View 1 (cartoon, rainbow, N blue to C red):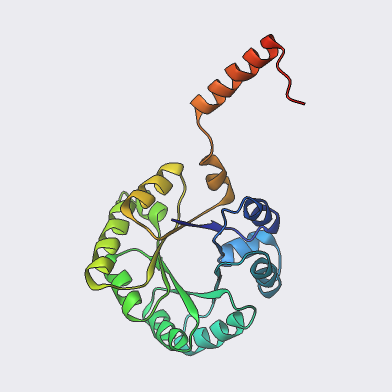
View 2 (view 1 turned 30 degrees about the vertical axis):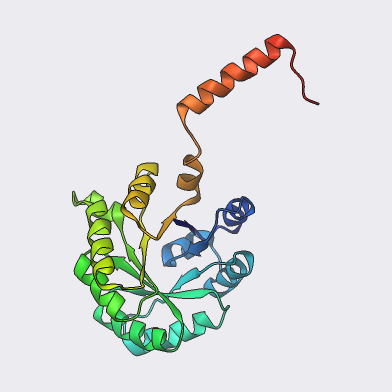
Length: 217
């Protein structure tokens, strides 16, 4: 499974990237606002920092305007994935921009039918939102499973990008189902390394090392 970082925080991206676990970055207008920086400036900096796809989202809602914004975003760097909403106009823009050779991340997916349309329109990535479905008592993981089955049935090459991930269990379940990519905030990715038994075991090892007078350097 590929790991994308869902943030526009350069320092957080750099820290995770140094570990070699960052395969890409996803941003959206809310994350750009939180960063307090210009969208073109921060997107360019992120694209220079990581090798993988960097999703940058349009803010227009009409197809032709989305296409114009998408082209401008794509000009920032070769690894930009244009992020489009899963609306009818977004699908139109996806078809045009994907035909031009651009990577497209179709976002705000909440149904398998939407995912099917995005794949047929040429999306590189489909972003089903797990957490937001869970918020309204629907099964976000079932959506991932449904999309996986449909894409496998017909050989669609669109990658399933599990989004709106809020817990480490979301990561585990998405990986078990076979999502191609997951995107999560830095704090969720960091929690993947945590386990109470690891902490307990380390504490005991350190006590024993001190009692035995063990020193390495």
